[in-house]
Image 1: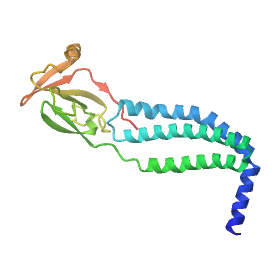
Image 2: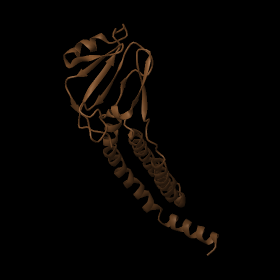
Image 3: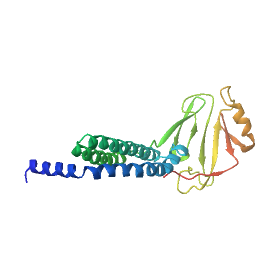
Image 4: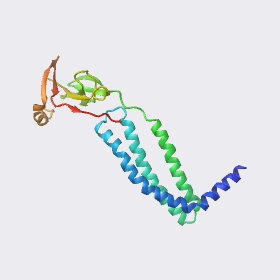
Length: 219
């Protein structure tokens, strides 16, 4: 069978089944929208509450793929309907097939190429820089300033909150000895009852948040 014959058969197939492809395109829209919303909830929660988890990049990639699926589903349905109404039956079918095949292939490549997030984060206490592994969920300033930073860890093992062996973690905060005017004093005052001064290391004050919280790692 020659290439010309093969292309002719494919064109006839697409032309003769154009109505089916258009109907399928609209059914896929009805299916894709709620499925995309449903399956983006989990990754969205993980990406929002665990932005420093090493797989937060994968969660964000899933959300982008689901958003793209919705856009392509609507585009394929509308585009195929317009082509069908204009008498371009083969083009109507090709729009649906091309859109969804391109989505599946592109999504597979994109998700396969997703890399893990940063393994370490720079955090500052005053002018001094600390390099903190992502497992400790470091929060605070990523540039020199008057504030400090905090991490979450299990006190009995000193493992970070995202380590599998760490279950109930506690927040540890490190601040300069003199809080400058840029520090949010109202926030500090509201949290004084939850903070316990455990000592100092060099020129820094170290506080433990006395109310531990259980943190579940992102997927």
